[in-house]
Image (cartoon, rainbow, N blue to C red; front, side):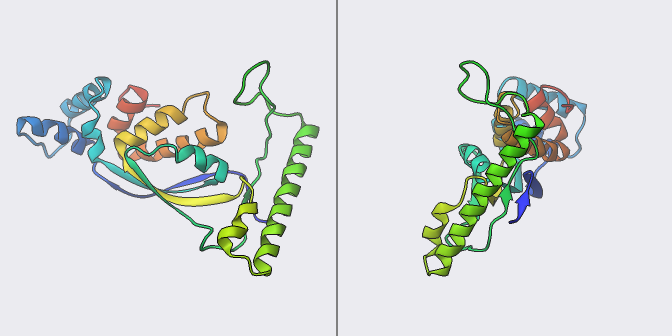
Amino acid sequence: MKIVSGSTVTYLDHMGDDLAVANAARVSFGKKKDVLDEADAKLIRYLAKHAHWTPFAHCMLSLHVSVPIFVSRQLVLHTVGVVINEESRRYVDDEPAIYLPEHWRSRPEKSIKQGSGGLLVAEANASAAGIAGQAAGQALAAYGRLLDIGVAPEQARMVLPLNMMTQFIWTGSLAAWARICGLRLDAHAQSETRDVAEQIAGIARGRFPISWGALVYGSEGEA
């Protein structure tokens, strides 16, 4: 069984830069600049502060994302300003990788209905890993047997677990990425999903430092 312990986000391509954001706003006055300066940075921070989001929508970022299914289903809830093309198990029938975390978390205390508590103690953590690994192994075995007897991949896939890894190309505007990360970087977001958002933020901040800082952190680019 192929096991992974985390998600990965890889940069593919982008369009635009901080100057493109400033020029998108400046075109209202029939003006354009060729070199970014502090006046542009000030303008970008003003746009972000006052929720003038359209200039940020002219810049694009394309990523390759590899995550467990249960994480991908949280991420694909975001549809405005982004598009996704995902690996399909209708066409792919090789053995998928399985996500098994190194550390398992406890159920939250009291009446909280979502989220996690602290890390399980070592003995419970080992038990959780064993139970999850066994369940995944059984699901993969069933998947393989279904394929072996001639079941179509589009039906055989129904027995695969939610911790199966999937991959997709995710492309969106800078405004959309900022909105996504603004939600998924929150301390209340699920840890596995927050990890993906942190990777996205790192890539976006490297390409659009002033804009990203203003949109997500309310600063000049520092997290």
